[in-house]
Length: 147
Image 1 (cartoon, rainbow, N blue to C red):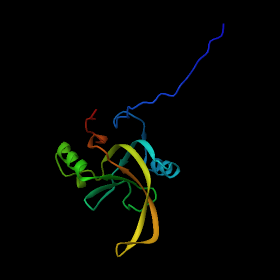
Image 2 (image 1 turned 45 degrees about the vertical axis):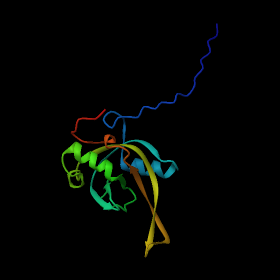
Image 3 (image 1 turned 90 degrees about the vertical axis):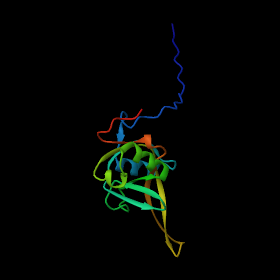
Image 4 (image 1 turned 45 degrees about the horizontal axis):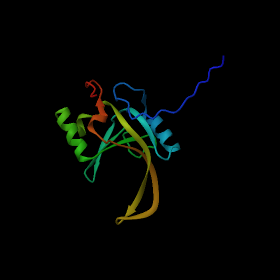
């Protein structure tokens, strides 16, 4: 008696919870994002070592120098920042420095152009960015996870 086994790929829309899935480090994010044009999805865990602001966006960095090639930058737009402030009860820019965070999303290699007088100079470098889509995708160590 012969038995045939047929397998088919299963598409899942479920996303890992920041609290429960295997976590990737900033260095793993940088290495994988450099090799994958569409980025690497997952849950990334990092210590926030520095923050910055530009054009209304808040940036959380895994390294003190945001230009460090090992740096993973979490990009937070004003609506997501406001939702985090409401959830955490305080401004997050200083509150998260030196804290461990877990962020669910896609880390992508991002080209940063140098400009002079608002025009690109032709010189550039790369950073690895993860754009926060929802405040629920970021948890702080010690915070109850949000399903």
